[in-house]
Image (cartoon, rainbow, N blue to C red; front, side):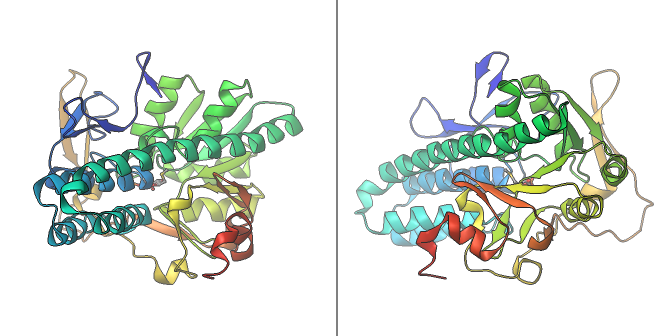
Length: 365
Ligand SMILES: CSC[C@@H](O)[C@@H](O)C(=O)COP(=O)(O)O
């Protein structure tokens, strides 16, 4: 997508051929800065500290991290060490595990002196594939939006949670890709953006993206969605996912489940948009089996923002001494999901629906 008229991807190889550049998402929305990652330890740190975040982008960064590791130590022990270090950064998004396993399996079949080059090439291929998948998700999801807009004969209001836009992927995004495609095609779309406490990915990142692309939107406090749905202000919900089970349970940013409950109660369709690399075919019960990342209490107790003089400040907002919990994701059971939009089309949120889109998985199932 374009920033200041210039097209960017969230991650791309540096001109030196030995490192990668990423957009530093901890600096958004107030500063747009690139950061160079030259070692696998730096890639792991970028994922852990959320300089890069969003399930598909974490996966691609992991793949490049493994490529960087091959420049340091291309032995089998080097592969194992890098996979362990990168894989330990964030536990919920399956895309990271998928990308690391995929690249590591390819590397183990090659002589050591070919591994670094092959890993860089494969990370680049995965990045290109992610762009193509997200663009296809955009086309499939935009058809749903234009049908709703045509049926209503007016602007359509979409509610989204967290950031599942191009910043969470390599380009286009998942839940936001249909919005970009529909907006560019002239479908009148307006987006309600959940602020997404505690890290405010909605207020900071989704709003930044929609602003940059000129998509009409309104940022709302996380607790406002149910009220807006009750009053007919939301026509449809689109969210992304960090891991979706083979049975269609959708794990996404904390708070997604509450939006799905409100959507079901008010008859608002609720869609999850995700590429194939987000599906965990080994799991059938997301509530029981998906590991939920527990993050630092400081994300809840403190807020950082820009001051009137342009400086930045971090302030405490919780009564000192109160215990704090910070689960980063929740699981929306498949029964609350109207449909799952992938690069192959729109599936019912159940095992048969997903297998219909991915028939090659039937044998394993
Ligand atoms: C296309 S991204 C889907 C999800 O990764 C997104 O909705 C999300 O929950 C991101 O969480 P984050 O903790 O910011 O990495």
